[in-house]
Amino acid sequence: MDLVGKTQLIIGQSAGNFSKKKMKNEKNDIYTQILLLPGDTLSPLVIEKLKQANHTKKKKPFSWYKSEIAKIFGYSSYIYNKEKTENVKKSNINFKSLKYKTFYAGFVVGEGSINVSIKKSRSAFFGILLDPEFSITQHVNTFFFLFAALYLFETGSIHYKPGSRATLVYRIDNRKSLYQKVIPFWETYILPYQSSKAQQRMILFKRILFFLEQKKHKDRHFFINKMLPIWDKLRKQKGQTNQTFPDLETAIHFAVLSSSFAEENKAKKS
Image 1 (cartoon, rainbow, N blue to C red):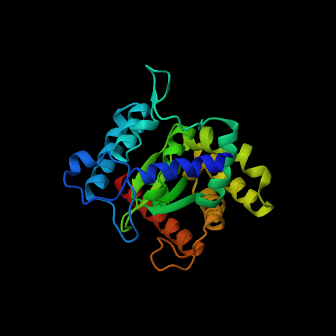
Image 2: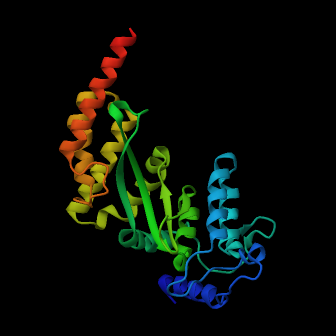
Image 3: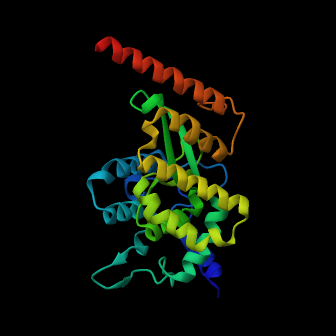
C-alpha cells in the first residue's frame, strides 16, 4: 500500500471508531476522535478547549501544545511515547520522513497558502501592519492533516475559523518560524515543481519577510514604494467589500495620512 493509501486508511479507521453522539457527558467525550455528519457543527466545548490551549501555549513547551491538541481532538494514540520508545498507535507513518514530506508537499500545494495580510494599527509605523503567514484550512473531519503539520514543522497553532460550522486553520505567523521551517520545506519539496508564476509568489513572500527583518517598514518611502506594492501583488482576493484596503492606492493614501498625522503630533509635543 502506498503512502496516500496508508494515510487514507488511518483517517478511515479513525472515523470508523467514532459514531457521532449527542455527548451525554461532554467533559469526557471531548477526548473521543471527532467525525461530524454533514450539517453538524463543532461542539462549543471543543472550540473553548482549543481557545484555552492556544492561550496557554505561550507559557508551555511545544510538546505540551501537541499533546493538548491531541487530547482535544482524540489523537492521543498518535503521541510519541518516550517510555515505550514507540508510537502507541502503529500508524506506519513517520511525519519527518522524506516520503511523507514529499506526500505532504503535494497536499500543501492544494490546501495550504502563503499570504501577507494587512491591518490598520495605531502602534504600527504609518498605521499599517503587514503580517506574513502560512496556513492550511481543513474541515474537522480531516483534522489529521493539521495534526501532521504540528509534527512536521514543530511549530504553529490550530484555530477554529469563526463563523464556520467546523472549519479549522493551522497557522504559522512567527517570522522566525517562517524563515526556518516553512521556506526551507517549500524550497525543497514544492518550489522546484511549481510554475514560474507560483515560484514568483514565493520570491515576493520571502522579500517581504526580508524587508521586515531588516526593519525596512520603518522607512516611509521604502514602505510605500516597495513593500505595499509587493503586498498588492500577493493579494489573491480583490474587490471584496470587507477588505481593509480595496486597492493599493487606498493603502498608500492611508499610510501617507497616518505618517503626516504622526509627524504633526510629534511636532506639537516638542
